[in-house]
Amino acid sequence: MKYKNKKLTIEKINFQNLAIRFGTPAYCYSHSKLEENINNFKENFKSFSPLICFSVKSNTNLNIIREIKKFGLGADVVSKGELMMALKAGISPNKIVFSGVGKTNDEIKFAIEKKILLINAESKSEIQVINKIAKRKKKIVQIGIRLNPNTDAKTLKQISTGKSENKFGVNSKTFHELVNYCKNSKNIKLQCLSVHIGSQILDHKPYERMLKAISNIISKTKYKFEFVDLGGGMGISYSNKIKKLNYKKYNSAIKNFLKKHNTKIIFEPGRSIIGNTGTLLSKIIYIKDGGIKKFIILDAAMNDLMRPALYGAVHKILPINKSNIISRDIYEFVGPICESTDKFVTLKKFQKLKEKDFVAICDVGAYGTSLSSNYNLRPKPIELLIKGRKIKIIKNRQKHKDLI
Ligand SMILES: *Cc1c(COP(=O)(O)O)cnc(C)c1O
Image 1 (cartoon, rainbow, N blue to C red):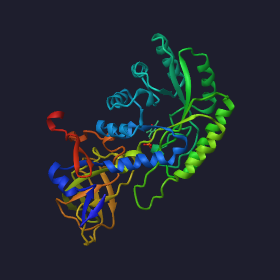
Image 2 (tube, rainbow, N blue to C red; image 1 turned 90 degrees about the vertical axis):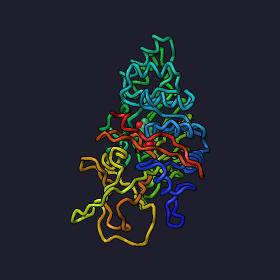
Image 3 (cartoon, rainbow, N blue to C red; image 1 turned 120 degrees about the horizontal axis):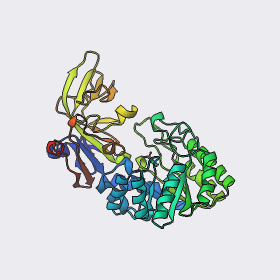
Image 4 (cartoon, protein in one colour; image 1 turned 60 degrees about the vertical axis):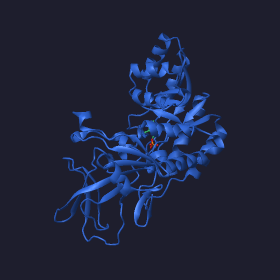
């Protein structure tokens, strides 16, 4: 995204035109940014050519997953619905891994029938269910066990997953027991140790500690894992102040790990692939003077973009038409929903805005639409994929008649 003659553009199109033609709120994705992210990700880890499984929960749009598939990525899914979507996008089952603490019998059965690469189990009970279903189907199913390495990811507590207080994975003691348990389960083949310590991680040190924990446990179990699945979690820069994750250091920590353990690496990135490709385009309905601040009431709301309300996440907001006139007021950007948490950000300094102006909420490609809802019975926004001068509607705006 760039300003050209004071107009904010995505690829070769300006947002003003998109807003007028397609209405607001609208999710707009940049294809070239997606391509750049995937190429960078591959480049960062090219010495050991990992299997990169896109975390579908970060963006479940069929067309987006299709584009990602074209770059050769697999998928990490956490429900039957996501597995069906990944398959529909054409991703080969042998590039799909299935994570999650609560897979139902039906989900496990479906995953086995589709012959996916790995079911990453998160408890003994789940392993028992997989074995039982596999036995009934006379199959041998490849599984992983998710380790909870008790590593603090140093990120928002709501999106940390690798500490013992979190529900995910099993502790090292249970992990040992389960490795032995799998040896005696005839219909499963233990192939993978998996971890995922959290999301929006910007410091490489938690990853180093995680690798150390994995290394110790593999040495102790003396089990040959075909795969080590390191999960995702690589953070992105939501503001100019945030320092980026040091991929070089993460990469060299993995290379050191691989000197000791001969295994294939899997990644499950979501946000780092799709996060900064998406923008939520919105129109100012009203500006209301609240005395100490002005409420900029947008037509986008927490049902369209949940992250601020859910995690206190902050997204940058940009005017679509840039001016040099700075407002003296404090602006609070809010949505129309009947909840006080329906607000995006409060800013002390911004250019002067008026009603009917358009603004862009940045970096919403990950956990934007996938977390959206119809709360307040609001139809979901249109989604557009922009490639150069080309615009493709990748999801139609929901209509009230779809809801009522
Ligand atoms: C959510 C999730 C991911 C993706 O996390 P990002 O922070 O988007 O990279 C990967 N693996 C598992 C198991 C997850 O639950």
